[in-house]
Length: 292
Image (cartoon, rainbow, N blue to C red):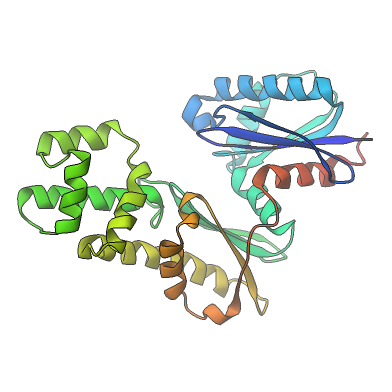
């Protein structure tokens, strides 16, 4: 029996599964962050090497695919691969986490994976090519993601502090977070991962904050535009779509996005078939089954 490893690594944790050649899960694993742009290439490679070694001791692996955040860029993937422990008698392929997540969500078939987490991106498999829309990072892009929502939310709080805006529901949230003073707000947004607070602004929009609702409408429109662009590039009749990422679990926000999509009748919304790490394992099976 041959065994294959698939991993999904991000800035918080890394999940992995080991499957056999009949696609059955034989073991699951979880360890720390492995995004090389969060923890550094050397630390990422060290962590990956350690858990691959541990898994290989229990299951003689025939191949591994690691879907790692930040490694959609070929140079980054090669840089990380060079630092991973040598001496394994099986092949290891490093891919971007978006690609392996897509493979898991659609089991290798056509479709658009809409990721709305800290950032936002749409990854489309047309059946003939892969097209990425969005995902330019929080500095110049990622509209519709948690960071962008939170940044706009705290910007609105700054205007409330100055007296430029008024919104009772948002005022109450700022009071709860203890950021109703200029110095406290500046210290807070510079010391916190503000993307974590996007859900709080979405909650306030639900509770009647006109400012938060305006922000949410703007951000939902941005995600809808990403989907509209993907739809234009898809030659088929019905485009399968899967939402994933932390904000995809908020039905209020996802419904708002859907309401802004043009030609929504051409979309087929569905649940992901498999997890990203299982998608990576399936890809390893496909790539390396015949190599040993």
